[in-house]
Image 1 (spheres, rainbow, N blue to C red):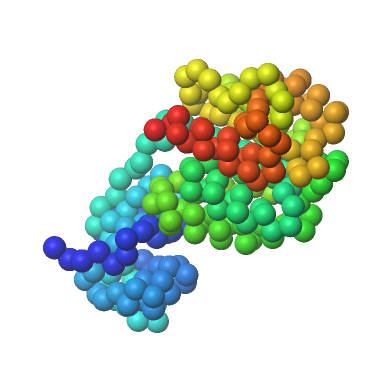
Image 2 (cartoon, rainbow, N blue to C red):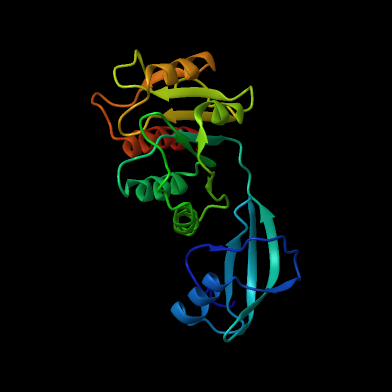
Length: 235
């Protein structure tokens, strides 16, 4: 049995069928060829980030890395989560993206709020961190980091059947209860919080206020606390 090249997933966007050969993207080729020092004939596993998992064999390893798909399978995703999130302080968005990706959240929708926005956010960096989280967690699903949206526009993207919560310190209800729905959505305010009018928008759209801890949490901590509870309930 040929040896496996790496212990974690590779990210291979595209739609390759069994028997197809193709060149790995630059970052993945560097990792396989230079970091792992892989050799032709060795095998690895990758995903397109959309649920397709592929086993493949290295055909050639040089300046470019060519692979052949041996088999592929689709990973089931019975539950999905999205996080609508105001801007964290400083560089804390990096940690937010990394952990939401590892926990299997489907989408991060940055919110443009009255008290804070994502104007200076490096979304290209965030999307690279999401890929790194996919590799780390060996997930078949890539966290999609959307472009920032005003709150009404973000709410408008949600399917009508989505279960909806908003993090609020001191809320009557704690956590997500009952059977996990197909799509769960959480809204988390920026570091300085939502304005009263913004909370009214969420309430009108059917968001239920929940508390995630006994104390007030930072933006990124609240988002990850909610995602952790969702991830534990989804397995």
